[in-house]
Length: 247
Image 1 (tube, rainbow, N blue to C red):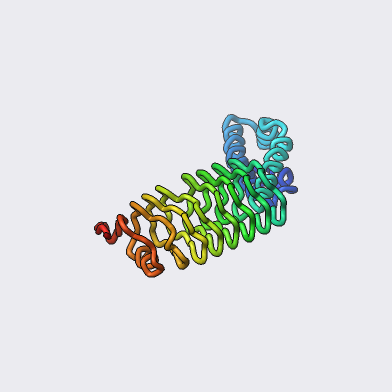
Image 2 (image 1 turned 45 degrees about the horizontal axis):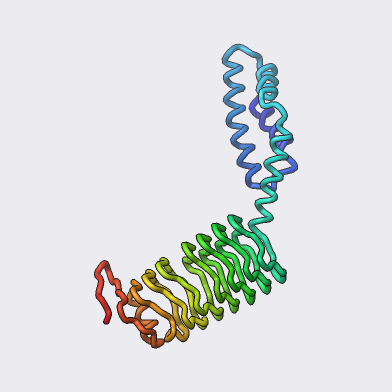
């Protein structure tokens, strides 16, 4: 009878097999219904009656499956969103979840991505002037050759984020924790890193007009910045738990 129950669920879910969420739901339903059918049998019901009572107990399963399927498809579309070559000036993208999304060659000037999850997304050759990325997850995101003048990253997560060849003039990274962030060949005129914590951050670019007052950094980051002529007064270099003030 358990085989009959499995075939019943297979038929109900036959149109949604490509969605992982459907597989998980089907497995969970099978486990619950199997236990319920066994309980019916232990109460003295014959196999056929126990099966029918178990199936009847879940009501209109097809409506539930359809609702979950529609939500899952919408999520998959959002995860793989491609808005490249779009004019999206001053758009509201607050609190969206777009993993590995594409926003290449687009005009996003003045748009708001606050509180969004944009991990792994790409912003290549895009206009991101005055865009808000406050509290956004931008881990492993790539901002290649983009205009980021006036952009805001307050409270955002920038682990492994690549700003290569982009213009970050006058952008503030004050007080932020930057881990593995890449600023190679970027415009950093007037860009501030006051009291920021910099770990394994790459600055292979002109940093002479960037501000690092009060920043804490590891030896590698310090060496790169020093080699490119950064002003490193009042920064702290951290190595193996020990701190040394650099004059």
